[in-house]
Image 1 (cartoon, one colour):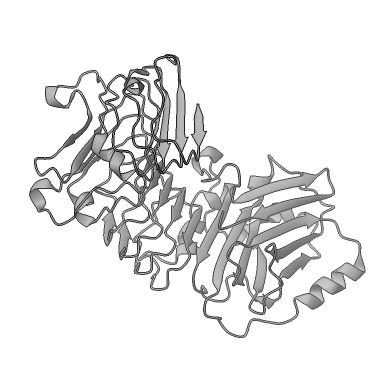
Image 2: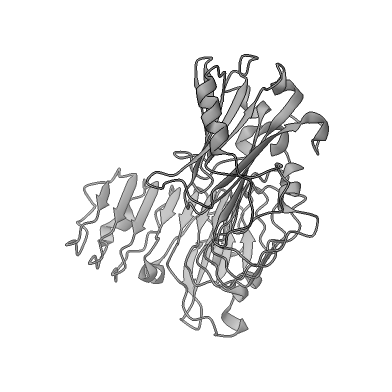
Length: 451
């Protein structure tokens, strides 16, 4: 059952006639005051999502939800006050904790959340908030997460600060996605957060964040957009699966102590077998791909017959004001001399200076990542790169450049066997890289760094 944007809904109906209900999604009902008490008896419920229902004042105890896998209370701050989740755990010695769930601290201003669900996979408490911050250390232990099977946790906009993480207890051995955006941290050290399988971390819009360190070695995607105070993110040399990083709107950032961000990523597993996408607010040092040329197009021509074996991949550098650029990488055979001349003329001016407010995008596509998807052959003799954004003309500050990376220059020379699922992508419907092929005539790689 899904109920969307029912503006006049005040109370849900009786659920006694729906004993087999497995999914209940209620979104955008601002005048909803009460969830009927019969809702607590839906013992087959697998998915419960109540989103943007800020006016709820009465919510039943849901102690019988033994099978719940997806739980979302995003944008429902009052709902936290009524949250009662009881999960029966095997081999749990502490009798007081066996019920799991949520209970109030003696101060009554805080809710201690301890999720011990055996089935819970996805938990979203985004924009819920947890009350006042300056209460004292005696009641700061508000967050205690211990859930063996939890895969996705959203705590965005929950008013969390440094003390919440310092005094928290995190035991999430299978967590893969963590959203901590729109919070009040100034420093976050992942030594305190035990998430050994974490793949996606979103810290965007944490405007007080100065330092982010000790990222899990399993991390694949890091988003820290609009973290205007961020200065350092520590050593990432151990993050071998890292392939996507976004620091849009971050101006104070310094490179990690082990070297430049891109150098560290090019030493990882993505270099040989996957793709890399980096978004920065400022220009990175020149020379990464040779020249950056004015315009929205760039071409690599007269490729050697065995170029896809002599080179390990293509590295692309784009500088633009465009917020959601689309970069097309087309590999094909070209015989049209007229179009060749026009494209070269369009990319005839070198970059002269850095423009304030531009974004820098660096992308890398390994040729190994194409072998199972597209067919590379010796008839392809040109690689064309074009920068686009729907509704936006060519900008005066647009710059673009690209270069093939020879195998003998690569940082990592040992071929490794990788599982592409280890790299992940945060949006499976609009992935960062999309690869298309029209028979044997061309390969089109669409790169959308901000999706």
